[in-house]
Length: 302
Ligand code: NAD
Image 1 (cartoon, rainbow, N blue to C red):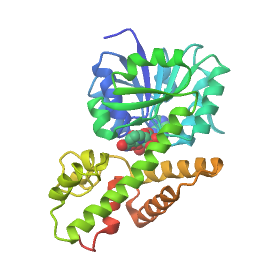
Image 2 (image 1 turned 120 degrees about the vertical axis):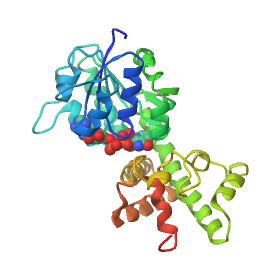
Image 3 (image 1 turned 90 degrees about the horizontal axis):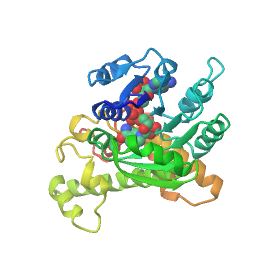
Image 4 (image 1 turned 60 degrees about the vertical axis):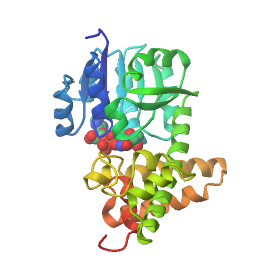
């Protein structure tokens, strides 16, 4: 057990295993989520469950959040019409690390609000999926001051294996949006190729092996195959449950498009991918893992 107390807010598909890894590493983890089932899972691994986010941050040197979207994170730290934000009660010097994927502009807003209260705030979104969160092999893309990142290393390295300083506040989120736009496109492209191959009579596993060693190789083929039965331990192997929800991918593509419009950067495939995930979500698949987008392409009944 170390002397360092960490508050961890948001114990979902990603935050749960990340908080568990910190508890296993010997940190004192005070955790909170609105969902009691998510809390119970983390409690089994030695974390203390607090009654509220405010109770969780009491006495914590480091506060980590892993929430769905910008508005959740802004409400948590800056407050809303109904409740004050956590920034108002945190002692000067507290290190705040937000690992959620949110708009770069939201991350910059948090960093500025934190600075005015002498808090050190980092945006540190992650890549690697739930498997990476469980295995503590996540990639962190960090925006903010180098001095704050130096302090954060101690905990980030217990949850991930690649830690990149992307630049100033918001830069971690900018890197994450670019990465996830590419991931969203790759998932659809890979699904198209695999579905076409199956319709031509190829076995999906055989085709995946061939493409993994050919010029079509990519992370989806290597780590996250969308065809049920090809890979163990991925969402496709469990009815597309857990993993990275279609609605979360849709949120990330929305953030990427918003940034692209502001920057006047052309992202034609990013725009198309956003429309396809939106249609998939509108058909009732928003909570399924995003690799279920394969189903849109499959013949009915497949
Ligand atoms: P999730 O929906 O599984 O978990 C989010 C959790 O936040 C839920 O348990 C919810 O109850 C909790 N929550 C919401 N508002 C809260 C509040 N005010 N206080 C306390 N808890 C609150 O989502 P996830 O898959 O864990 O994703 C979290 C973030 O990580 C998202 O921004 C997502 O885009 C990003 N991300 C996800 C993946 C992935 O593979 N799932 C990968 C990389 C990044």
